[in-house]
Image (cartoon, rainbow, N blue to C red):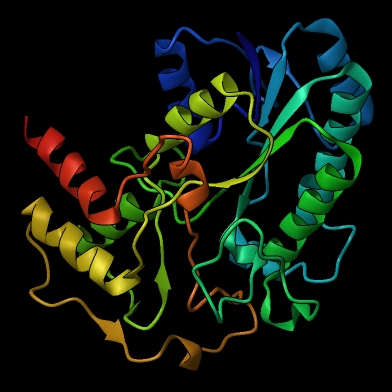
Length: 298
């Protein structure tokens, strides 16, 4: 099995790549800063990558994921967020169609308004995008392009990914731990709920979906909801590190208003019954944290 990883330098891609290689999956890694270069916003660069490398499946990790940074570009289709998440995705999709490749695309629960979560794979975003961030809107557009133009694709939705590793900008867990250690923990919300994704689950899910030749939309996330506050509280309890005795919390997430602070799902999260029917059981957020801190003590 040969798989192309586009955006291989990203935090999630680097971890997923290591685990896939342990499963004897041969990878072709492309990135702006890798030996094999690809700029997904440049159509000729994308075409050259597909023409000069041999693989059956491409996993698109390259994306603009700075949610607040994206919000500063709201409604700007000339902005870098739109260029990467929509135009870049379109370039990859057209190449997959031209060269007959399977595409695995990462998406998010941020495509929903977060009023009635968690969401299953059949649910679609509301027509009114006022309650959806610009980042979420660009991912909606990316999903539409894939569904309209490709038959052989997997859209893998995840949310608030976490692991013990902190490459690049880190992840939900490492950022919380670092802020806790430094005494700079920001207000945490007990009324915002989601289903965090345990990053080591992602390569396992990909391998199963490819082995079973699956197509369509799948979710990989905790099967149970948790608030940001409770996630951080349990993580700091397990870590045993010193820090403030009590986490600061903000009473109501929706009370926090800032034009540069992107809207996020308040009752978000993803249901995982579809992938569980294939025999893969995503890790519950509590079990994920327990695994991480147990391994750190060995």
